[in-house]
Image (cartoon, rainbow, N blue to C red; front, side, top):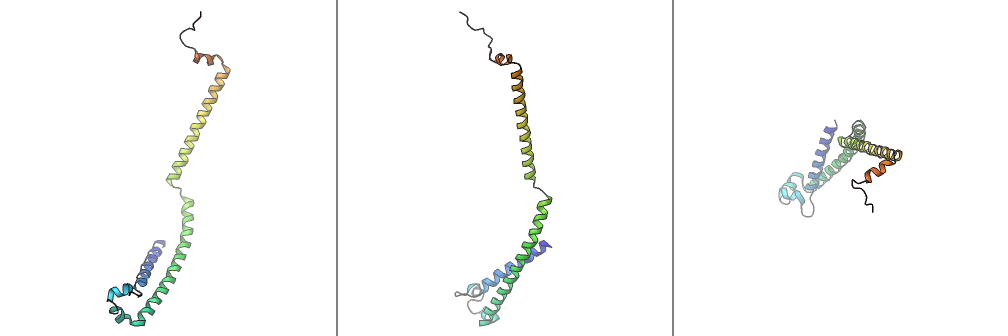
Length: 140
């Protein structure tokens, strides 16, 4: 249903564009291009008839265009909320998984650091084990 209304809306847009372009301006516009001045446009619609018919068609198409815009916007507002609440994007899910993984790694590193500090505090001899070299100090 929504797709059909969008297709109708596009057809209204195209018709409105054509009607506006066919209206004669000071330079005869697109209506003059088809008939070369007053040729076909004057013969088909007549002098004043063309202006009144095209202006009425423009008014009707503009009103129908506005109504279709309003209807589509109301339909898409309800449609977007339903889609957004039921599905999450893959990018969002991957980002959440990456953040959870990073938080777990940070917690593991912090826990390992705390265990190492507790082990060093319980056994103060370990502090000197890392700094001792294999050569004895010079004693003179």
